[in-house]
Amino acid sequence: MRVLSRARKEVKQAKRNSEPFDWCCLLLDVDQHTDLDECLREASRDGIKVLVSNLKFEVWLVWHATDLLKEPGNWIGA
Image (tube, rainbow, N blue to C red; front, side, top):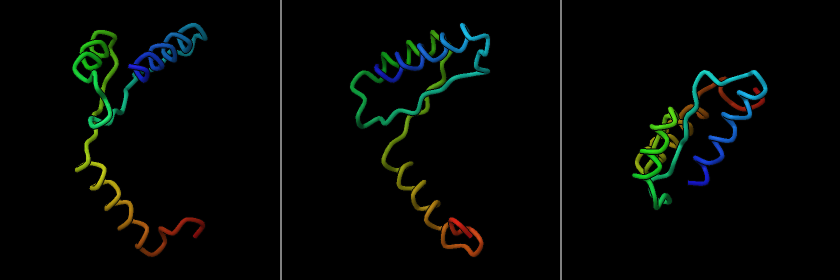
């Protein structure tokens, strides 16, 4: 719930600064979030979108990032 609390603060601060966000979303790791259902409900109530990752997604992402780095011209600093 700390991530949701932080998101709420950032959204409020942006509104106070007259620079509201178009939208806000959280990326949560399902393995480390003990109150996931409650967080999803509260975020939805506040209009905050939630993306939930899991090991399969994380492995897929690393796999694709690794493949991209092997392609000519995609090297960092190239």
